[in-house]
Length: 527
Picture 1: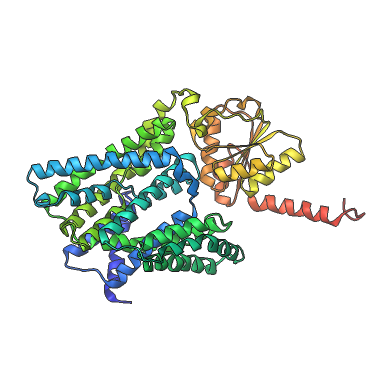
Picture 2 (picture 1 turned 45 degrees about the horizontal axis):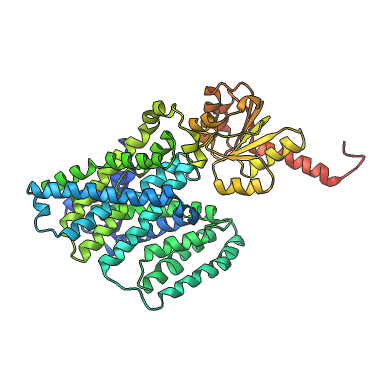
């Protein structure tokens, strides 16, 4: 490994630690480290560029693995994404035109078509920031999470098309043969289902992202990034898709450090570039407000709309990729890259603060209940079917708990889960399951008949989600019994004072003993 690369990664670690200490997103620290090294005369390396490109490829592949392509055609995704892009482009062009009229040197002699390209690049939202926010909220499968990811995918597709235009490469004559990946994906999914849990799954996933994804699309004259996204989407129906996405998560995160570092190495802008970057960052709150208004018009409640809008407010790392390509094609001056890099980094800071404050900003407005007929179907009042018991989280554990409550104790049990696909599958099995995020106060505001519920089982996979749902139960005045399942001993203290706590492995051990007795059958020695 080269000494330069080691020094660069060390500087990135230092920048990330500084950002963490200041409670800022680590990628801001990586960018600042790149700016600092550029100021010291350090230039990038081919190894760093390769790692950076691989990070982007795996990011898009992981997004594809979690994505349901049917979401793309929904009005809150395609419609909101298209309208917001047009409005954002108009806002950015207004800022750029104003800066040019004021005589800002960076705008001198720039063609209108080039300004339009920059405006398009800045209309995108950060996939990295949005996905991180959703993962921290455990909300990737919720309504606002799925909508956010859908809008990001639409933006990514537009960005890929823009890159193809900028680079001026026509697709190869055999590019239509890539459609054969659709039937081939069935065989690949079968192969994934047969793999063990371990490093082989991670290696196979990275290979799929790079070979049939990036390399094959690139050879066909299409953007390799689009290929990685497409292969991820084709593999999303696999039962191993979520596990595969998690297995490459750490690798993807590490490689994205190289991406942000390489961008920072392009250097910090001059005073005029900094002035323009600040003017552009002033648009970030406006971008978020536009998203919130458009999602509200699509039938979202205030809280749902503002959560999605806060995730989508920042400028995208894809804007940097587009501007890098535009710089390479001599469409814009190289100084633009430093300016856009600074604007993107500052937008991350603004988005970070906005995301933290979104619940507070929307709480008072959320108390107003809109006409149910005008709401999005997933935002309308929830009927619990006069349930005796609620099971929050209908994964394997919640499904087993629900079955025991119904079959053994004769209770009317209703399951709650934020994964729409899982809800549909369980309903097809005849279970009463409603879609919703039990950690969201608005979920409980939508429940119309909770007065019959006597007990609640907290069976969500993340401890933080169970704690948050318990808090919402107590705030709603629920006085029945609550049982929670924990994986680790240190989690017990968070729940023990407010719920009956069962260790996951304790419960599994008891069930294992039950199964052993039943399997043994009638025997005088067993009673």
